[in-house]
Image (spheres, rainbow, N blue to C red):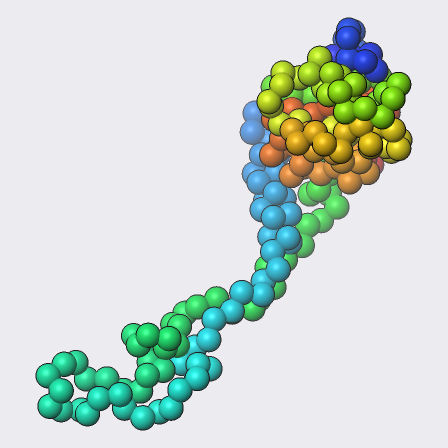
Length: 208
């Protein structure tokens, strides 16, 4: 599949062929969804907890006499219908994590790359470099590649100190390394700008 390869300043581009995995129809879509759900589930802490009837503070004495009050019958103040009473069917600590096989991760990454490339969402840059560690210079590169205002995932193998300093104040850009890039990153970002070396590393991971 041919992708646009920009110069390091983002001024001009040429088209170059990359070995992006291809899929027919909806093959791999269901697996991609399963992997994304698993990634999101694995981020959950699972520490939410409420107190039930037996855990809230309070005595077991009836709040009202059984008869003669003119109102409904009540037990003690720890009952669920009472103010500050126990919570019924509230959340309890649990493990939300899901197991993802290496093969599933690989196929999901391939499908996510294919979807993003087919939509024209992948742009390649020869390498990331700036003459000076100034935000204005790096922001100009991003603007040349992608219209301002759109969320952009920027990926490289390693980041030089000057690029890190020049990009730290750019709120629209999300930075990642090619070794950590996964299907979830690609799905939730409409556009990605990746170095040529970084893309080759990602494609190598997706195959092996």
